[in-house]
View (cartoon, rainbow, N blue to C red):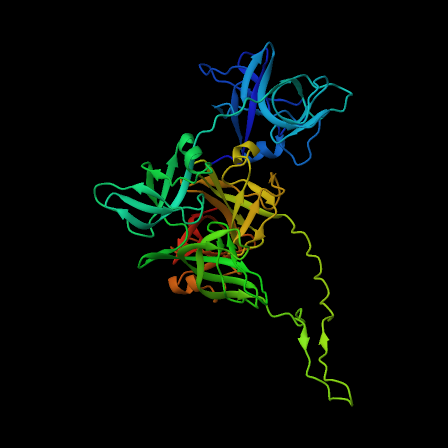
Length: 524
């Protein structure tokens, strides 16, 4: 069974006992370094980075929600050495660490996501990004400082060499027996490039490809005012991101987007394709599924921007009700009866009362979630979560990688999630905090493709009859306040009238829908 808690630490000292080493962690009280017990034959050096693990009782003892100078130092013999997250060098009886950080002129306290606070007592710097060298010092009694790290020196960051670029494109035609035309958003509309195809012949229209260009090719094809059509030999076929279908000599693409309600036709913007020519008036704003078709490059309504895409068809998914009072256009009234010696006249009402401004929307509040899976695709990290109170899947995007915040699969977090136009919850690095204790923290274990979660449920809270998948599978459904309806497909859980039922659950795809499913019953 996986330990309840793991922390990342750095070996910062050695005890008189040769088998004991002191370990700094950002999860301990300032100056209360923990200790590891090193077995004979195992080598640990000053400056080594570790993952230290603890069982439930140890975790509650060493890492309470409120830490103080009286909190016991942690001790553990369950650890492993990992690759250093930041370059670390032993200096005498302490360690130095190098990292990059953006500073402002005269900054005396530097906030860092891993080292928390770094104090700058003597180094003068200006605004900008810097290479920092920090050093651990003994805690200063009476100074009221919240960290043992100080800034030693700074150095300017050398300009990084450009390394090239990956570009996603769609095959839109055939040039000859050995080349396909490819559209991508990085080039001017109408300036399609080509890919050189294998001996088996051209690729069909609508095929998605990922092309890799060297920096020299990027400078020539994408950053050159002469607008040279690109040509790629280094590419691979990929799964389509949006549904794409060849239509004769062109292609259609289906997208889902939000369109604002207006009284006149406006071109539509979509992040992947840019502007889409549109002659349809959408009086009701809302979420739509649109089909766009590729045509000739023409100017958009602004007279400057070009586009090859135009709206071909659309279907409303969810529209907003029409407001009770719309902003009207000037109205033409019928002429009044003629008066002697006075011509007919027409009255134009141009000033009509506008509707009151909409009330300000409250800021979204953080919600509790558990990280169910972390995937690394190319250089992008995808973090999948489960929202406890909303009973919904979600995705978390962060500017740093999860391990830099000591987050892993099974970690509980608090973050702001918003509902996107595609009815999915997403958090864009907003107020993400790791939660260590409380009712939302669960014991988890790795299953090779995510996590299993240990939970318990009462017999008298069985799932309701509206659960479509449960009715189709004819299986019991157990209810949990944080996980919703849990399917017991294989009838593993034995019902009890006196005790709670304990089990391990896992996220599965059931009849096209992701569901929590019982994978093991725990007997007591």
